[in-house]
Length: 230
Image (cartoon, rainbow, N blue to C red; front, top):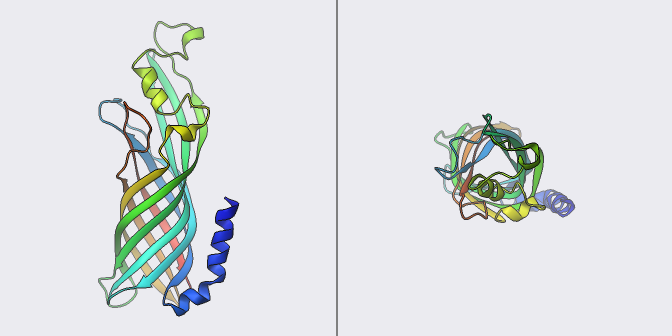
């Protein structure tokens, strides 16, 4: 994380050079309501959306007429919450967060001739830095004693092993790269020579993030973002 902070500072300090090249540099932060779905048939329960956030650098370069190319280099957290209460057969309460170094690249189009409404779309690539467990309450099965309550029978045990529940290093249960497509709708305002913007963005994961033979997981989320460009 310290190396990322040093890189961010270096890019900000060279913002004058970026400006001479016609590229705006700024900061962006947001709130993310996200989750990771699992393959159909794995469970009869959907994972809940979980609140997390993002912060990082933003870049924007003009293209033709009302088009521009926008990119971000940011720290992104995607939360994951599962709550299942089907007593006496099963009880699970589990929450953790994936922490990514994220690089979205979008084309922005402004349907109006001046600053204001814009739409954006493009790919997003994220590298997994860490998986942070937050809460976990064990599984209870009907007909088991307290001594064996944490040893669920197949196929349930396999599913929770695939979720990374039993890994000593949770990151080992997931692939390092996650690819997604995003689309957004936003509004920007001129602030002297600077720009401020607000955007609502939907992200849909394209790749499986779980190293599991019996389970496919893909991320999705809705972000609200505030940005400032010099």
